[in-house]
Image 1 (cartoon, rainbow over the protein chains, first blue to last red):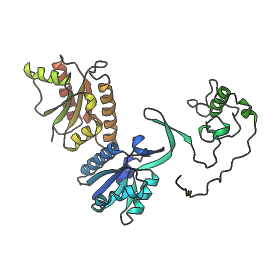
Image 2 (cartoon, rainbow over the protein chains, first blue to last red):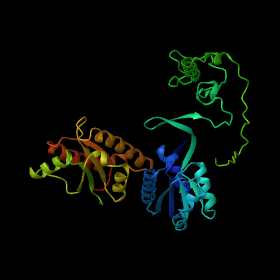
Image 3 (cartoon, rainbow over the protein chains, first blue to last red):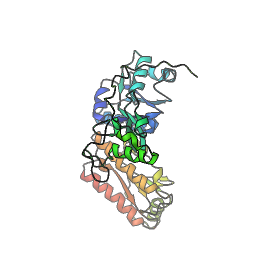
Length: 219
Length: 130
């Protein structure tokens, strides 16, 4: 899922400084799961903005809403009534959601309240890890389902490097596991250690033409 | 809520303590508004922020003693939320000490009064109007 982090509040306050009534639009999908842009976070941010504005002796009108998926035009369209009643929109969705809402309501200024950071999976309560770089040329069949491009600090395809610490930790960050030790252990479990002896040429980093586009036929 | 101390009181501990304080005739500051909650863990960040928005001079969350929560970890969760609320207030230039969590037992009315007084003192020190 897409992981995002809320922008520093000062940056958000500065962005919406000229406006007196703002819609805070969250998204109930990825950013809600990573506790950044769901209904609760929308409420908290709205309250913070009202408090910050009242501290300056001014007022701000806030309208709070969330879309089921802010990256889908049909679902964003449902917010039309609310959007029409405000001067600007502050979106707490990922970059895709922010751009969708900006496209659907072209006459309204739309501001991002979050920084979209990576594709992640939950590791524990409140912890998400980047496990996929969306490179478009998946390598996981050769590495036991562990991506060295993202999970190795050096992103090397033929690892491990010479710096693996005792206990299988990374030389750059001792708190992180060495991706290649993880790969070795996984392949060993599967009886596929022969893959460790293969040499892999440099990866094709142009597998996906940016900006990416996919056209599919529903099966 | 202008100038009031809002105290979210767990009905298993702090609310009983507050009740006992009243019965024992212990002096309680006038600017106190007690909100009874089924557990300190019921108090969410938005409740704390909205109380501040409504003009509360301070917001207290009063729950059971450590390890004695009727709902197992409600007081632990409440403490984390109070801590996070402090951060959220500090971010926008509001004194984070306006929010606090206290743990007390149902049979500790004096501790309840002590917590309220401590909060009042804290606010006087920081120059917040009572």
